[in-house]
Image 1 (cartoon, rainbow, N blue to C red):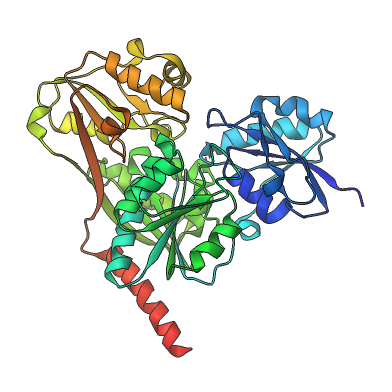
Image 2: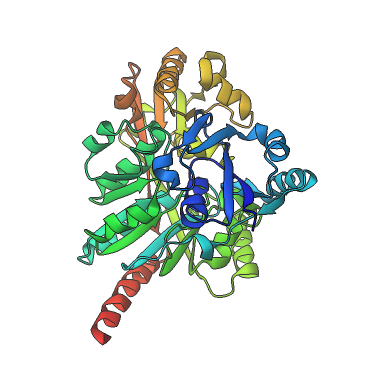
Length: 447
């Protein structure tokens, strides 16, 4: 039987995972190429033979996604597999229409085909959009698990932007490990706060190998999702975070809606800064597709070290990059802090942006008076630093999960904006997690 010719559309994450768990060593399929979107500098390389397996001794080429229309007829493609996240349902179907018009099937692999089984209990924290606050929930979960006497490991959604072979299995126990593996700003934003909670963090490319490594040292896995993707490891408890600042998006984005439909616990975050009617809209949407999920409200509390320094000042606000870019947010915690603590003016960075940072702002025109902390390569990190120094502000408000001021050696006055999860209805979330742990203990005793 002729092998089916396949292209996998991705963004250096779900695409590699789908290949590893479903297509690698599968003699019914011949993956001709990956395409890359969303993340800069990840195309025009090769998925290496060391990871691709015995059927792909030369590896698999990675092309920019805009080459897809030419790649399909050139390679006689039978199937195009869509494998990245935080895109609208309309966007997905436009891609489907392109593929179908060129004679290829358009495929979405289901969760059950791509989840890895683990011998450890697994608690997953996912979301319906980028920037809902799932990382804060993950940190909260880790604190509770450690207080219960467990040794958790955080397994993070992939961010393999550099040497794929070297990044096959990544383990981070201390912040120095981030320096040793030349992590980008985006990686540091995700890993460093989890390390600060005392958790060992795993990430990489090959999650089958990652799970094997985690099982040797941890007692429970906390899956920390990326964008609004589905878990890579089969969870025993699925927690999904929603954002009332983008009420309705939980029904409009892929695969966020799938996450919502699967959720055991639906956490509506940021209720302290959201319009009450929008919170009700999110509640109604949850119930329209998921009748049984436990709905919990949480706040995302914003703090700064010295609020008085902000009042009346001209400030530059630097926000988490992915939240503003493909997350689609037009503001974040930094802007809310500027408003809450009465900044005199939030400056527009666009006239002062250089190189790829200017390109990012041009590509996402909805971003006004904010600077996304984008740093996927050393040159881009330097351009981010130069852009910040160019803006004639009194104070830089940095609302990224890492200390960007020290990381970039910024000469201007910098103040960090921090945000953390707080419960607003007693300790319902804490009780849910503790109940899950207690059920594991009871199960172990019964065996």
